[in-house]
Length: 443
Image 1: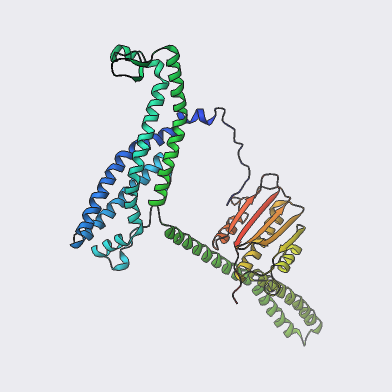
Image 2 (image 1 turned 135 degrees about the vertical axis):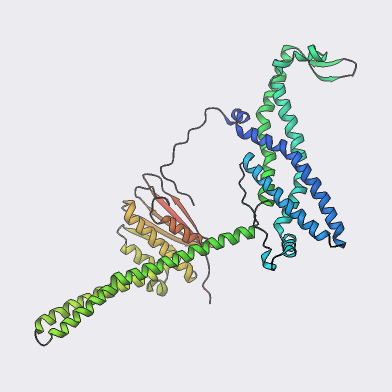
């Protein structure tokens, strides 16, 4: 979900990125991650190899099971260290994986060991130790020589005098025959060429290191984070809470509307009819006037009940579908609205209802906040989605942060795997697109 409004103007840096990157903190943090990665990966690989081999070898006895369980528990802890290192040095924020659910089997050490052995997340942590080690070796062997040679050659004009004074050779030896004969970088031109080559390495090594750490990011995100199933379960739990809260709020709204509207009007109507009954014999004219007023109150009560029923689920939507129902919405909207629908079939009733109330909410926002003179509603569907686009020529600035109901609408759409996209620059126009999953009605 995106919202565009009052966005700050981004200024283009004066220094090109290729010249700026070697001196940024990010490049040095990535290089530090590569340097620390080799010793950590070596220790983890050695422990993983030794403990796994011992655990598998001891499976013929009872000792293999607890040893493998302890190994998996240990590497879950090492995974937490790696996530923290990636977060600090690479800026990768990976959520903690789901905890081991030992209580499902009654608790106790055996249940805990069984839960660890059945946990795919635990085995992914162990797999990370095996896969990360060869990559850490490669990254270290590529990054460190490039980084050292780059900065060393770039600074060569500052330290070349050290070689003839302390090493007994005129400069850096490019090649030689082992008897003191060879090519040494000792002339001013050769020193400048070497420094230029070092500058090239300094400028491009951070990009190479960034590519190497990109694989580290993928390994940490793919193997040390929560599983896709766990993510989906958390998402469904969040959606369920949203749906429950929305349903509760709707029930409270209906109860409030009934109590403050139609119910209060009907109570007053009953009292007026009682008074008219008492005056029927003594003062027929006053009783007739009161009955006439009660008749008007009945009409108002019926209108309120119809509006309330329309807010719950309009009859025209059930009988005739989205096109006519949206046309009715457009007729009631204070902003002139054009409806265009391209639906050959009707979606499932639940999706149809959500689409109707989505357009209703968006048109209400247009009427209240946009100061527009015209709006359009386009409705169409693809093989898998129902798409709604509401556009107005108002002042723009629509966002989910200003209390216009868009935040709640986005949550409702998300609860059914929908999506709300907002394009509303200051000054307008505003285009809001809602995407819902297309579901055919059940026979």
